[in-house]
Structure formats: C-alpha cells, structure tokens
Length: 269
DNA sequence: TCCTTATGTACAA
DNA sequence: TGTACCTAAGGAC
Image 1: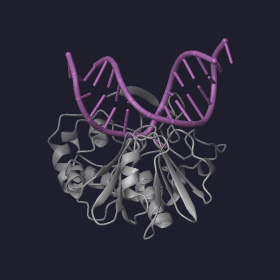
Image 2 (image 1 turned 180 degrees about the horizontal axis):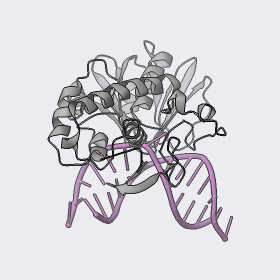
Image 3 (image 1 turned 90 degrees about the horizontal axis):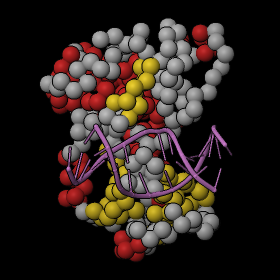
C-alpha cells in the first residue's frame, strides 16, 4: 500500500523496533548481500521519509534508500524470525523483532550526498513539518498539464499517489482534467491543507480513509460497505458504482498509464 | 494453473 | 507513449 502515508509510517515503525541497537542485517534473496554485510551488526541510528522514499540511517553517514514501487511490501514480526522466503531483499533482526522487505523498486546503500540528491528532486511533502506548499503551487499555476497528472508528479508534490489524488480532487469538487494554471491559490491552499490532514490520519491508521462523517453509509441511510483496498473512499476503484453523494456513475479513464476515477457531476471544470 | 491487476518510477524512442 | 522491473493476491478456468 505504498503512498506517502505508508512510507512515513514505516519510518516510525522501523525506528520503533530497531533504533539505537545493533541490528542483524541480511539479504536472503541476495541482491543486497554486499551492502547487508557492510551494515550487519551496526546500529540503526535514525529513519526518515520524504514522499514515497524511505531512508534508514546506519552509523554516521550510511543510508539505506528504499522505494517500494508498486509491488514492494514490508512485514514486521516478533523474534524469533522464521526462515526467510527467497524473495526477502532485506531483513533486519534483533532480540525482539524482525522486518522483511520484498519486491522494492529501490534498496540501495547510499551516502549523505546521494541522499541529498534524492531530496532535491522531490517536491514538498505534506507529511514533513518543514514543507512549504508555495513552490508546488508555483509549478501548478504555470502548467498546462492536468491537475490530476500534476498531483502525481513527485517533483511537484511528494507522497501523493493514485488514491489520494482521486480522493482529494473529489473532496474539492475539481475536475481532474482541469489544467494546473486554472487552479486558484485558494483551491491549492485547500487541497494542501486537506492532504496534510488526510495523510496524517493515514499514518496513524495505516490506511486511507477520505469519506467525511456526514457521507458515511450510516449517515446517508445506506447499507454498510467495505471498499476493496480496506479504506473508506469516495471514488477510487469505484468505477460504474453510484457516487456516495449524488448517485451519478463514477467514471474511470487512463491517464498517463494510471487509472483515474472521478464523479462527473460532483467534480466540475 | 494461468491470467490480470495493483496505492510506482525510470528510461528508450 | 510504450516498456521494463519487482511480487503476490484474486479470479477465471
């Protein structure tokens, strides 16, 4: 489930289970073996997330840079760790816990300088307290690209993925095909503030919920439902189902090789 | 058992 | 714009 909230939650959980103690580092699958050997027995000193990028800090200046991509998964468990399956790229283990990483797009040992380069190519992250939404709006407001594409562009804003994109545009009644330059400063401020709130809740609950209390099935007098991916949402993966608010059929389309979902009635140009 | 799909990104043409 | 990469779950057969 890798959008930004997942990665920030992972940073907290990796830190909570392994920080400030020597940790056993292995790569059962083999692709990270050389680096794992260098880190094995050293201390995990800090963890950090920026958008969908996770950084595990070892010793003074060694970082493991992890990006889950579309398929990557992380599983925590209590010691003793079971024998790893052959797809485990990275396992950390100590006396109390273990954690397995499978299927990441990126798992690499990098330097401070290389880490800085990653930060430099990412836009502001609604989950980082130091983030400033102004540079993101500067890019959005100068672009003829659709707002739907801009929200997924990690150089513009970091951490938003396909679910938050669809949901935040719905919550603000914005047609996904509107050009970035037609988004007003007030609209951008509202989108940003909403993302901060939604994604912080995502970190706390480890899932994406976007439906306002007044639109829950109970409040609307409708039967309870469970969305496929485990959270309560308005439009994501609800193609051809009735909109929770107006009853129109939710539409779907391809946009830059990803599935876009929106309500043609609630979201206006 | 095979096929499709997925909350992502990078690179080639 | 298309394709490659990484994994696992669910559905069709």
